[in-house]
Image 1 (cartoon, rainbow, N blue to C red):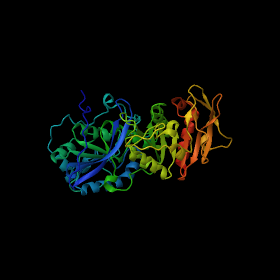
Image 2 (cartoon, rainbow, N blue to C red):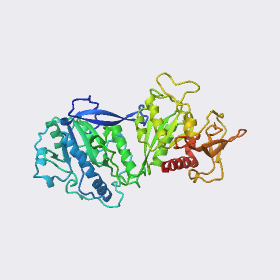
Image 3 (spheres, one colour):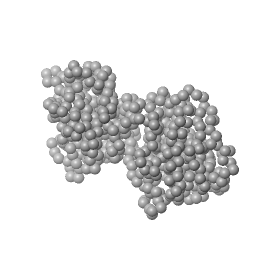
Image 4 (cartoon, rainbow, N blue to C red):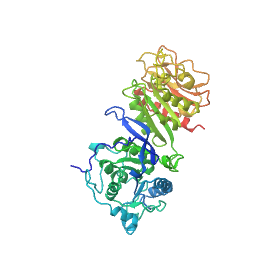
Length: 502
């Protein structure tokens, strides 16, 4: 039996306490329903006693055999040092863990501090490495079997010490083994903030890091903007390096522990590598008729994973009028809405209204024309609606749809070329044709659909809103539409076009 098997995750939901505590905004993921494969991502403040908290700096080496990794660590290290200095000043123990570099530090008091910690009995043995067990946590969402480096270089031990930009101060500790946990027990430390590299390797597997510390019952969080991943974008799922990191962070939040940001310590904006220029697309997905809960995640990974950071907000399986995690909309550059007849708590709907009022882009597909209202009745008590969402945001006029059955023929609405229609050829749609005419004067029709014995209807258009922002809407979005290359290209072009607008 594996000794590093997954145990019950330790909770970090600790009550607020006195002024010497540190407040962390902890993000955790919980499955929307058993075996759904979809997760609510929610952030809430928790409080830890600083004296009961350690910061583990995982394998922030001076040099890596992968040149891209070396460069990214060098970029991150000075910012990480600011975080560490703040944590140290607040009374937290800093444990530096540059694996295989103990000879460099053998005569230092920081090394001796870790060595002198008495051995304690552990819940399960602390191993040199705790490997992924697919039966417990599934596969990692990235393929790192090539070593994870963008450059075709053979691996070798390039490191000799921790990166010099990270200060090692009096009272800190240095180790690369189970000594880290022994020292925590000696000092009464139950809370651990892990930072460093790499999420898919050392950050998960080392004896001083996530898998093994969670197993010992420690309250563990990963500082998600103070980390990186060994991932080559040429490998599956062929997304950008930074999206690869996001996917592994999702895996950690779903299977091991929550995460926090460096901003809890040093303020400002979260750290992002200079090469990470991705804009943030937030997808609201709350409809059960056209199965966009299946089609949109696949679309996002395959079509947006190279150039965008994507976050999903799902409906509550136990309450259709609740979209947990709507705070992420605050950071959206583009909002993509696939919602059908939901009335929401006022604060959740306000997040959407504030995004629109700020003049930010909005994309709607299919049922987004009637996203936030009931059919011919007001919102239930305690909930808010937005019946004018279609007209005010999309310039639309949804009244109903034609019967199911006839295949809709989709063609360009005019001979004028538009960037959103680049590469989009005539294609069929299996979904019923929506009745949306006439569009507002502010809307520009791009595609129209027709069925036998009925007037043609716009099926895709742009709208310049009263607030100055730009919206794109398409009444297409049936599960089978995502099998049409023309529709996939249309939606990808729409994201690219709206994200590129000033």
